[in-house]
Image (cartoon, rainbow, N blue to C red; front, side, top):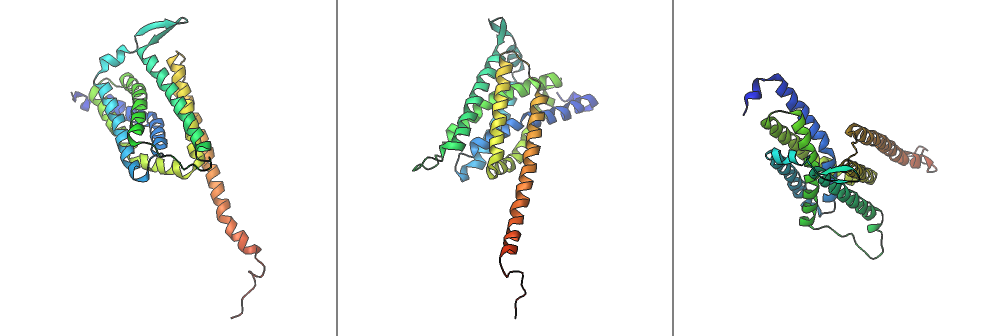
Length: 256
């Protein structure tokens, strides 16, 4: 099972696969962070941990049932001349779910809490976990198929999944806190989820969308927003100094 330990190419595959699993897990972390933000403060850490453990469990279950996973690529029927497989159906339904959920979250962020006489409604813990589990299946399917294409040994795939989820567990709270602290980042993250949802729908309908373009757009948008945050922080720190200078007599020396 571990005969690959003496094979340099297996270690390269492990490092590459772990890095890719972390990248593919970014959208998972964003989705979990936004959903968990609807929960009371004392439940968020537990929900994040359980959500990521569900993600790891789903990936491992799919890895240990590789025969079934690969059979999902077999065409089941045709629509308008396009072959539809089990994988396509999962991606299509998952993408539609992600589009609907992201749109509802944007509506909630913009209008859901602004109605007079209404207080913010906190989500149910179990309902949040169910939503996380549904999307874990979609994200995990893409992740496992990538793993199968990169590595030849099941143990290499399992170790890569465990390592990547470990990194996600460490980073999840920081990502969640950052998203909650900056509303513009949250809106940008929801826009990313809509983009990912459209990508999943497109792939489910047979249109291949290179992931590099999607992740480049996400990284570029984040870089621009980070610059905006820095500019706003500098302006806010300079305002007290300007206000102090504008007070008449403030610059005059005081007699003791």
